[in-house]
Image 1: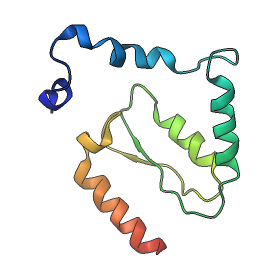
Image 2: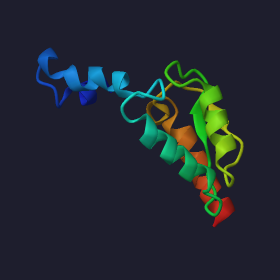
Image 3: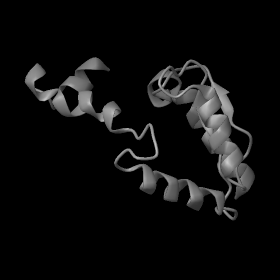
Image 4: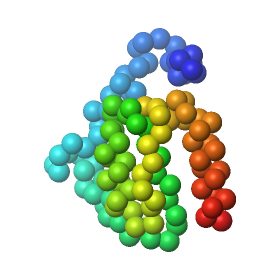
Length: 110
C-alpha cells in the first residue's frame, strides 16, 4: 500500500502538505477552525433521522476508541461505537471486515 501513498509525491520535498495536516487539527477554542468544528459537532447532535454506524480502530493511536465512543454518543441516531481490529485507516487494516459490517448494517436499516 505504501507505493499508492507515495505515487503523487515524486520525492520527499512534496511531503510538506501531508506532514502539516495533523498540525491543523484544532486543539483549543482559539485555534483557527475551532469555531467551525464546534458548529459541525452541534449539527451532529441534531442528526436524528438517518441511522449511523460508527466503526473505530481498536488500535488507533491518532484518535483512540474513546473519541469514537464520544462521537457516537453525540449523534442521536448512532448505534454504539463498534471497535474493529485495526488502527487509524480501517479501510486498509480491516477492509473486508468493515465492508461486511457496512453491508449488514445497510441490509438491517433499509
